[in-house]
Length: 138
Image 1 (tube, rainbow, N blue to C red):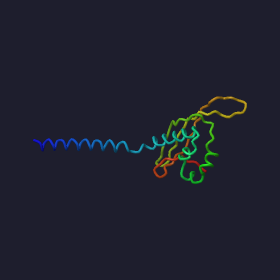
Image 2: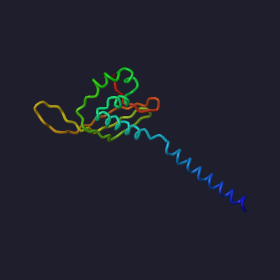
Image 3: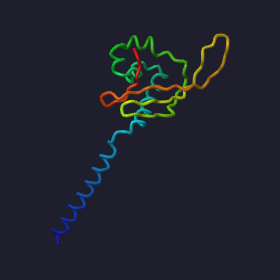
């Protein structure tokens, strides 16, 4: 009787361990490309709107980061009239995605106050070494 109880307990523990392993594996699956790019694109805009040049630059493609150092990036690439951004649509091919972003922009028109206007921008994201990066020509 005791050995039968031990066998049943061992089976139950094994079953619980197997179930926990499946849950753990499922939680570590990479996001589908559209979801991964949407997160990265929103992260890029969030960092840019906060003025965080270092973080913003980290989203750029490898060739761009090699050609444009931190100082030059902060000086020449961080300016924006956008005050808000929301990723709306992402469409992907195997190693390339297009992210559509709604931007809230305060246009600088001398002598006129237009307020905030909506604009739509499309960005190209490339898969490089397992990570999606915003494509930008240096």
